[in-house]
Image 1: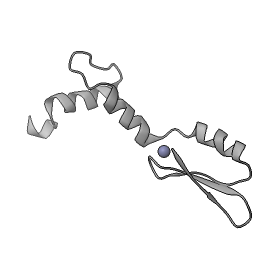
Image 2: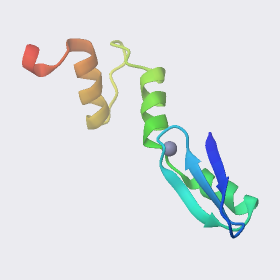
Image 3: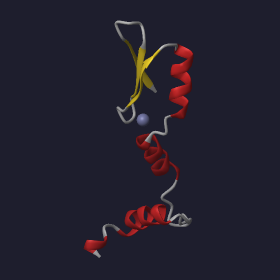
Length: 81
Ligand SMILES: [Zn+2]
């Protein structure tokens, strides 16, 4: 989901509504806007997808970063253990 604004010179800016990052500015065509938006890898959306997909105790993820997230979700913060 993106918010488009138009500049005085007719170019466009696009901003991601998930992370509020400016994906591109001074883009000349709507086609190019679409291409740039496709290339945006959204940290907020990735995190939301990650949380939505799993955190299932029965299927621990294999990536170290994901494993840390999974463990803290299952056992709580380590300083409380
Ligand atoms: Zn984003």
